[in-house]
Length: 92
Image 1 (cartoon, rainbow, N blue to C red):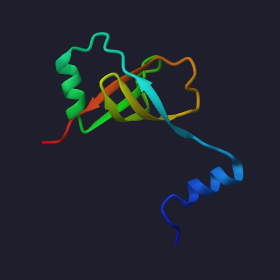
Image 2 (image 1 turned 90 degrees about the vertical axis):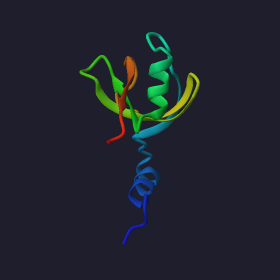
Image 3 (image 1 turned 30 degrees about the vertical axis):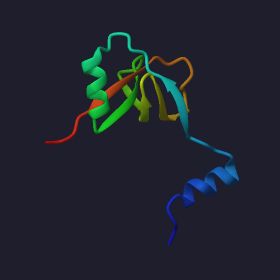
């Protein structure tokens, strides 16, 4: 059997191909009030979406403190995109 991440590690090693990267991001608070920021901290998932193309998911915000954060983003076609956040709330 394969160990977790073996295929990704092999592809990166032999082809030099990296599809996603953990990227530092700045969260603009334009239009975001304190309630929105609180909801973001309590959300189950915060997706990063391309707001120029039907809000297609291109990654996920994995950590945030204030306006600084880390997002795991797909690199393909990232340049020139306007990004936004979409909250996925916890299931009741």
